[in-house]
Image (tube, rainbow, N blue to C red; front, side, top):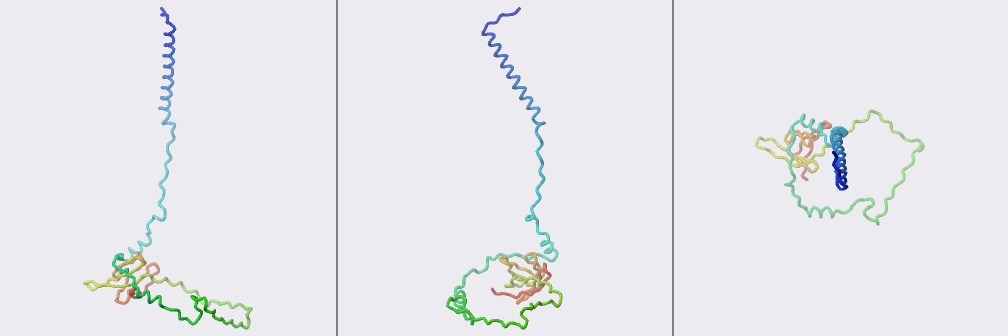
Length: 210
């Protein structure tokens, strides 16, 4: 037996049905995204590790030469160097006057020096070409840029040389390596024997007071 419903009751029933339909649609949409989301997302690309730049790679050649030749020398600081400015020597250097026999390049009143014209040869049209008579000479090794400014003698009568390379100070015994390149030889009061391992060049470096 059907129960008759009034107008207000019918309206409430329609509102409940509409709300239920909205809840069903919203819940189904959320469930769809929850189950379909992880499978649809693409895996992130794995980037290979970048190789180290050339500037950060260790200098294997220099360390290999130093380790095969001998022990590294002790590096010192320049804290004990006297930085005093000697004004008397500076004034002596500034008081030097130009005493050349030619033109004074520091004076605008100095007359230019007369240069004689060279005498033309008997055959001026023929170019003189110098022909080498033998094989070219091999290039000379560069000079050793170490400065020897002192030494000390230990209780066992062995000597240590004080060497300067640029702004670095080293104290080295015979057989030790300075700045990964220079090997110290015989040490005496007046000079020290230095071998440039890069060029296999041995030179005697005299002692320098300055």
